[in-house]
Amino acid sequence: MSDNNRSSTFYIAAVYIGTVVGAGFASGQEVLQFFGHFGLYGILGLFLTTGLFIFFGYLILDIGRRRNASSHLEVIQYAGGKWVGAAIDWVITFFLLGGVVTMAAGAGAVFSEQFDLPFIMGTILLIIAAVITVILGIKGVINSISFTVPLLIASVLGLSIYTVIVNYEILLNVMTGYYNPGAAPVSSWVFAAFLYTSYNILLSVAILAPMGSISSHNTLLKGAVWGGIGLGAGALAITMAVLSTLGSSVGYEVPMVFIASSISPIIGIAYTLILLMGIYTTAVSSLFGFTARLSGNSTKHYRPIAVGSGLVAFGLAQFGFSNLVGTLYPAVGIAGLLLLGALIYVFIKDKYRPGGAVFPYPQPAMKLKGQALIKNRKKQMNKSGEMSIQTLEGKRVCSPHFTINYQEKPIIFSY
Image (cartoon, rainbow, N blue to C red; front, side, top):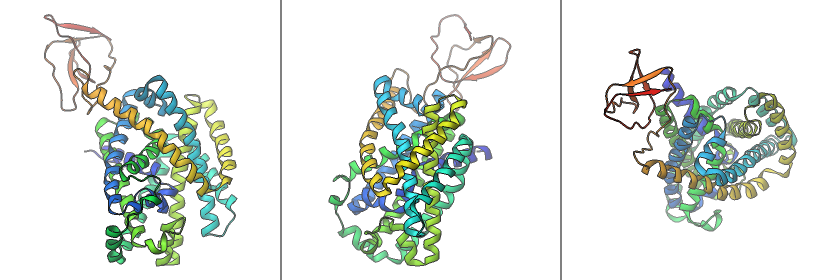
């Protein structure tokens, strides 16, 4: 694999992780609620979630590639049709703005609780940084996230692994003896895994959909796999770290910051700064998706919408971080199941259609100049699944998957 392909795979995986990793994820509170309270069954739920992240992440990326999507709208309309797609679009669009609001409130909470600074200062700085990044466009979004994610994941894994090693015996006792589904949003660990996946996929589809149009099929698949594995590994590490300190950390709104501070005040401050980076990446991806959806292909309205959305998010963020998380995320998670259902429907439909295949998906034929003569009536498929054809000028080209009704005579196609 070339350096460019490796770089693209890394970028896709990093951006995928960055859209999911935010205040709730890196704080430890989110995974505690959805997985930690189920004890050992919660660990099984994390493995299920990892597979779901890979599967649904790839579906979104590849649909975006085939539809040449500029926003999430093309993907959800293809998956859900006119009416279901419209309903999903409304949910996603407003949840994207809600994501910006929640992250702004999270930044304010961190400034207030960890640095003893005004809540409003954190929200203002976060909104300004997110708006500036989004104005730079999709490349600015991808570059900012791909720079932040490796540091964030390394810090989360490092802190979690250290905590688990130090409290290994406590972790074993908690995992085998602790089971409190009543403290979780839902009583079933399987449903919790789907719910956790659904609202995170809703948030990430805005970034993943347009990314599909700038990468190849193999790169998208590898990016989705590594992105899903990275998310699963990070969530597993955080869950085990929180469980190993359950007696002391469970009462804190940001358990991971408490764990870091208990090791060293310096480490606590460092992790807090890294947590702010995670908040920033989620705010950027949410604001970009919301702005791209409302502006469409209009560059004239793109910047005003980004700025206006930032101002609205700043105002709504004053309701507080915990209040927003407690009311917004569960509701959107349930609504997000509609998107997962639509994606599963597309998967089954494309897989079982006549001559269909899901990996890779069929595509319309590439437009070629002039006429193309199929000299060989047999399908000549190369390693990437593309059909080789011979033009009248003798130049050999490849066109993406399309169906040909072979006849007795050579077939001439006009493009």
